[in-house]
Length: 101
Image 1 (cartoon, rainbow, N blue to C red):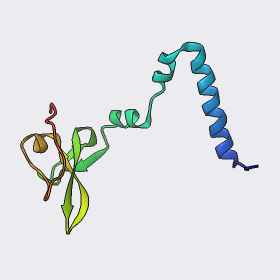
Image 2: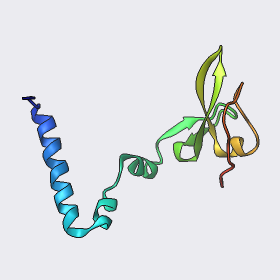
Image 3: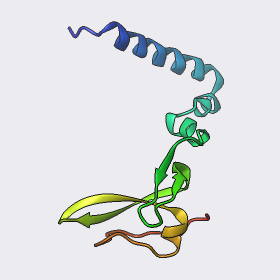
């Protein structure tokens, strides 16, 4: 038998409650539960620095491109404008599809 901490037990109970509550209202109720990433989109104070232009940009307007630095994989965060303009990290690997910016 596994013992759960009080915090884990509350989380399990909350999830069970949300599933039961959603079952009474169908799929739409499940989709109505806001995910943390959706909440983050609304937070305009979350910013990152674009490695291409060095501007502080909302994380909602950023993309992460995979490249290499000193023979190790690294994610390079760039603004959509720089990525659409063609900026790519050293030894870029992948495909980038331009986004509306």
